[in-house]
Length: 272
DNA sequence: CTGTAGACCTGGAGGC
DNA sequence: TGCCTCCAGGTCTACA
View 1 (cartoon, rainbow, N blue to C red):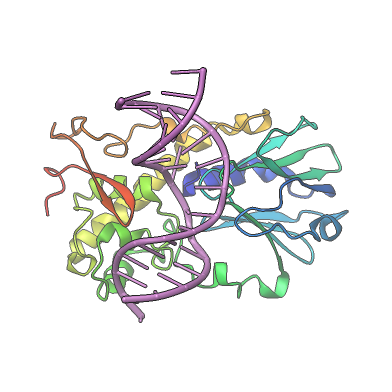
View 2 (view 1 turned 30 degrees about the horizontal axis):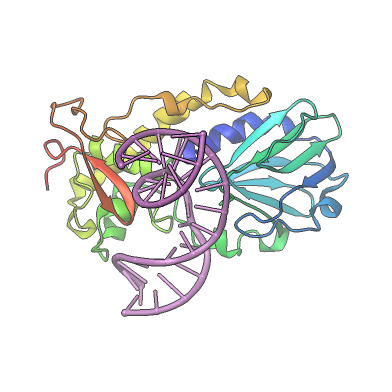
């Protein structure tokens, strides 16, 4: 269930692992999106985890000689266990630390990824090299967005979900941010006014920040056998609310397909 | 270069 | 209960 707020919440929940030493690596099912490198147990044994960072929806576990890169895909979840619980069906990967802590990856759909990057290839790797700015950074502002949109004729929702434009805006938050900005998801990207870009940048930052705050309230769950971040409980304006009344105007929320993804909006609040 | 469709994979929900 | 279809929070890759 990972959009950017959950990935960041996951990262915060894993911070107790910083400074700890890897005792062993368990690869139970190596066939994720790409194969989990079979050398990981040798590469990581007795290595100290220096820090855990995030770029877009990737988690980067920094070790002395390189980075363990992890993506949660559509259904991935990381749990921090304080003991060796028996693995279940979709628990594909464990990082076991010398103090007994276990970081476990569960990913039923196996769209996730676990990769290794040597230090000299971290910035150049194709998965990381072409990413746009972080949405909560100052680099993502109205001038930047307006400039980027000038050559794009596709729908604004599709545009803001492109990680080369800006990272971390997934299907839920694209819909929610566009509603808050009162912008129709199908509006051609190059027709947004500067004022619309300003509002959209603000609502993207606002929506993600609120979701992050909601997810952050459930960090204690990460030490249970089952991680359960709480941001999903927040109330959405449009996402998943087809046929229900708009919280602002009462108009019924509609659902269309855009770029093969369900797209929710209020035709009254988000006119063309 | 831009844009779109297909691909990867499992499980849950709903219809019959 | 069983079978079928559709849908799901991502994003890389191929091709027009």
